[in-house]
Figure 1 (cartoon, rainbow over the protein chains, first blue to last red):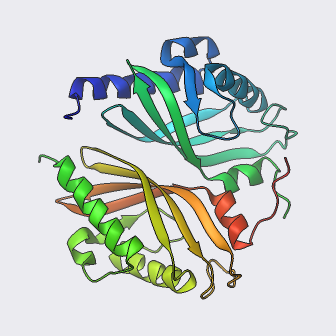
Figure 2 (cartoon, each protein chain N blue to C red):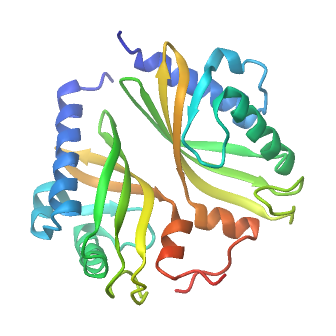
Length: 142
Length: 142
């Protein structure tokens, strides 16, 4: 099937807007515009669905109030958009899983991989530099 | 210059099969530029650096292999999501002597192609899983 270029460009822009509204401005109210309710989540730390995404990120943004995901590369084909990004912030609060605040600088790379349906996010996979993340939040027993 | 997305995907697929599955570097000149730009901090620059790096890895993990899960291509970029597997039975890797441990961790590789050859590379790996399997880091506090 030949990918529809217009859909690919529309999908990329939707993902850029999602990153701006949610991962920069922390506007969780905007998530409805970007995500299907039955969002399938493959990251084992994050609960299922749009509801699970909202719960997890409410905690993340409480723990790291200056949380920011900066897009390094965005690549799209057919119904997929892959985003190579770097997450930064300061771990000053509770809310990221069960880890108490460390006041550490957080900085780690991640690739988020999305499938879209009718211009909205419906499925997510990711790979993150988990050693950096879990060291920074004080989770690793050395 | 027009980027041929299907050619780019083909180059990366063949590169993966020959190098990461068959450990055959004999046709590397067909797939990779000499001045290959490497953004993985553990791997030295250029095609020469790539060859050295993987000589060490294949010695440490003789059954090193990749299973490709997803590939997307867009303009001059190709992104792959794969699982690396193998057993650490050979030499030292990243300062860790061989333990006989099984490795199985996810990686996203991001390639930029230029004139049909791999020119630049970034990656993100599930480093907590990888370093735990190597024996370098220990339990994550849950």
